[in-house]
Length: 237
Image (cartoon, rainbow, N blue to C red; front, side, top):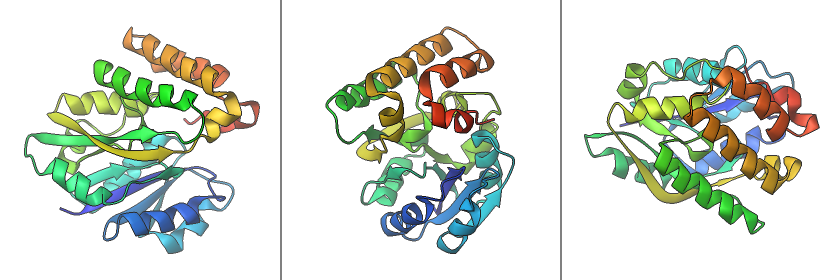
């Protein structure tokens, strides 16, 4: 079954070409779609020669990914961030997981390179996520197209659209994880501070589990998870 890789992007001119080359190398044969959200730095034009299609939509990751998923041709949709490093044989790993007809989707574990504190972040993200059935987009969530349609795609909420999508996916069938790691860029951790950002993510996740709506979580996210130069980019919807 063909895999369509969807890359949400906003003002990623500095890395989009390099990432798409990496994507072609690690996932040959997959359809690659860049979902651009009204970038002002030429991201869409830079990406066009290196992917199968650029889908432009209103800004907001949920809107962008939903628009790209609608345009995708693959039976499996894989949502990947543009600052990631994918594991080798990633398509084989997805095929292995998805060959079970009871499995509707899956995700990869993550690894942040560098400082020792990131090992705590890696472990917290994995085990807390398993307990709470929560995964963020950094984990490279993939799913059957039919399951994506059944759950209504990504909800257009102020924050946690990927977490809410993941929880809905769980209600459709089994969701499995791979022990292979996606290496996640530490750029936000370096801008905000590793300890502060790890704590802030945990705090926001706890509030979400206890029913605090995304519209109330979004201002907390902007205050605690965004360095000053990133505040505009953090307002994703």
